[in-house]
Length: 420
Image (cartoon, rainbow, N blue to C red; front, side, top):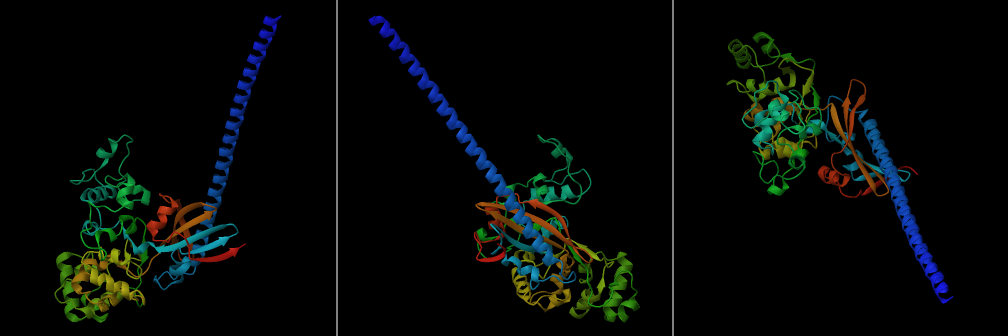
């Protein structure tokens, strides 16, 4: 009897242990399922917030586009309404629970890597490997430069591809080119310095490569009065009748006989008889072939001191003086000769890189939903009577890092309520 009771107690104990084991397993399973459900719900909420933040950023882009609708295509200055919209990212626009911050940047205020010459590239914070590889990437032919790369190099990579041998289509594409890495674009390069001082101050204060360059920029050629006169097509008499002095008109005609034609205005400014008065007239009403569209030029009305200082022949003092003049704006490239230090010699080296307006603008936008921030960028192009959204892309780095790159404060200082 005692043994029977002992056996039953043992069986009950075993059952109790098994029950406890099963209950523990069920508790663990329920806990796991609960954690998984919480994780799933958290992921779903995060995804929803990401989408709301993205839509808020898109709303910011649309707000910027509406501002550009009224932009004068023949003059682009920092006095225009687009330049102050959003207070350089310092203003938050509220749409219910979401907000967006925006900034419009003139694409022509940057150096266009599709058109910059090797001399110009050497004045930027780029290694010779990057310069050679960039030129090899955008130019036809299969023979690489000394430190460059063509298809033979790219085809041997773990994931092979070919060099474009044409214009770079997007900023992201730079990362396909030998020598270009995220660190090279977005971080200070202690081993690579620009060929010139681009900004007053220490090396740590110098701009990042990503803050200086673009692959998209278009300007419009505008003469002060009427159509430009082609310096390669007008006769000596026509040049003289159009206002040029007799010695300059004669030298232009004689130089054409020797050269065949001029390819740049800079070469004309090196003629012995050239003077400031004739140079102004040429910039106001003459041209080389008189193209309506100018690719890759730098807008003197909006470019930073660093971008201007990168131009061949430009000194930091002249770059600073041009920036100071941006408070009133340049109506003509001839007005550059009013800037202290901007001489015929300086103009001969960089006048063909300069413009007065822009047809392309970058829109920077950050949408915020709760704690989630999404940074978007867009390229807007001015057309004859409208503005076209050319492309929109999500920024390569987190929103917090983009704010630093763009020079934005971490948090806005102003708020405008668009809707409750």
